[in-house]
Image (tube, rainbow, N blue to C red; front, side, top):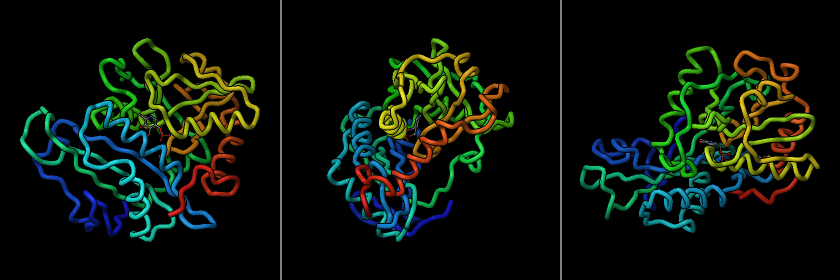
Length: 300
Ligand SMILES: Cc1ncc(COP(=O)(O)O)c(C=O)c1O
């Protein structure tokens, strides 16, 4: 990771090296932290943050879900993200706002605790490397998503990522780029940090958000597909439907639009990125780079 100079911390800019957490912090021991992942793209009009307000809304929704007390509001964090990009003079970057229980008494109890807030930015290229262009091979994970009454799956809480961490490593150790997690009923849920889409006979399908994060890239793709006149269904999807799909792809802020060309050692479609995937990806990059419309961009 390429470090940058400044990190926003509780309303002030501090040096990257100073941005540390106390060893006995709740967030480190019990995962008392929530975060967002946002991309800022280089455009002709300067750096543009993609769907900033939607990401920060989700951050505060996550805080509400886990009943985290935060001294900051959306109206503080949105400009702070813009300022952090500007202060580090980056044309293009990844933005990581984090709300976390940093200090205070040790123990699980968070009653009376107030979360600290930080925003870090750094340069982050394609999350799945050249797979963004060529497509990736994935496998079904032996780890599943928990039930929504066991984990708050629509909150980006650090602790939610335990199955994701194990699934990712399991897949990488077996030579795959990424994992796909099923839900407790055996339906397809999502990747460790990505939503999944399936294309069959020109129609787009993606799972409900009962067991998957309500992804902002997922929402963008649903809207772009609708504009293109591509029919979309948000519904339960099985593994066999994925095996026989014409196209599969992952979406996410980090993964962007990554084609999946092989799933559980079965070739998907022609075994190369599909036509609809390529079209939606082209539209996505044209939007994030400010080439078509700028409704979702905040210039920094
Ligand atoms: C578990 C999980 N699913 C899906 C996504 C994709 O969501 P988004 O498109 O908002 O980045 C992410 C990334 O934030 C994630 O962590």
